[in-house]
Image (tube, rainbow, N blue to C red; front, top):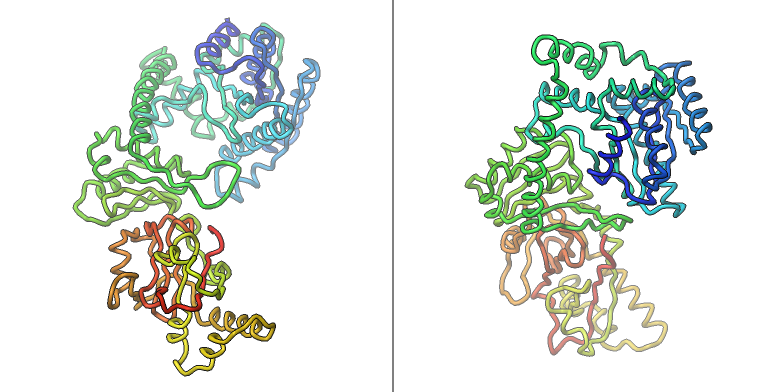
Length: 524
């Protein structure tokens, strides 16, 4: 009966496909040993392969080593590869400031993913063909629902434990035992003489889950409903159907409304540093959809825990409010901001927002002096394509007095080594006098095509630079005069300064003989 239920769950939920590899989390307890034996018996029929991972948590000296020995002997008897790992979970809990339960979970999944990654890196299996099977059952589902209800959950939380979810490295976590009751698992182990190990700490009402299993559920069965476990599982399935419907609505909203901003940093996997929506689109959503979209947006950029009703209400406040520019904080340094008709979700840290030190910015600026042969006319228009072309004479008028001897040397320079040395000396002097930095109080600019000064603050407002990102826009300056604002198209940031701007005061014209060519070397 148990194997039939597991087979049905696998097929109905599409948990395992032909030629895939299943990594089983094998603790040695009844649940995991039942799953191990059942999948062994189904592997030929469904055409998949198996290996096992055992984690020694070091919680129960002596007994933990006996568990490990039992698992390794069981796998050897069945000719199944077994990968054993040892973690000092008490030390992990202390170091990370988490509970011992959380430390144990961290250790298990770390072991699962290390094993999966090696299979993938060795090219034995594609990532999509590696599944990690864990042994949650019907009773675990009921305990999870009660724990969430007690702590406070939305309707999505009532869906409980998923049959499958995405894991790291492109793998999938699966739960083939989720339709099997604990009493049936224990009976299966007896019938098949599996003799699993028993963790006696599971019989101690120490952890919240243990208290629910040992105290609360028996009381509910005795006083209210003898079938409370089955009833909670029906609630979970109903809530899951509702969640699936809402998830479809959220997917449509994300496809239609969200703009994904790729992170500047190169990596093997595509990174997302922020998502933006039209303010009107979010305002028009029913709260049931909007709240799920907000959570999905944060999940996409890395925040998948800790979002409470209070956070969602705060987001509603700035979305539905009358302020043109407002923001609110979410957990772990994430935030949401409204400005210029957009709602943006981002991680509010220096790296994601694009902050880089002025020292590093300086290293990204290359300066050359070239003759004006007409080929640089286009790139002098707006400081785009990584370059800004400026009139050398006008720049020197700003840097030094008009009677400087540098003018005569530049006018008469030839191709000899002496003049080349002087040109490099001049570049070095310009390098020292030009600043590449982010904004400071009092900065101003005369934008190309305009007369007179304009405050940098006013330019940022006109260009719709995001308020929280205005300290991250790189620019080239002489004192408090900005001569080149470097746009997002060059810097790789997402500040709202989409294109660069150069100064009217140093533009090329028909009288330009020599050009200072500024180049921003690469996206940071």
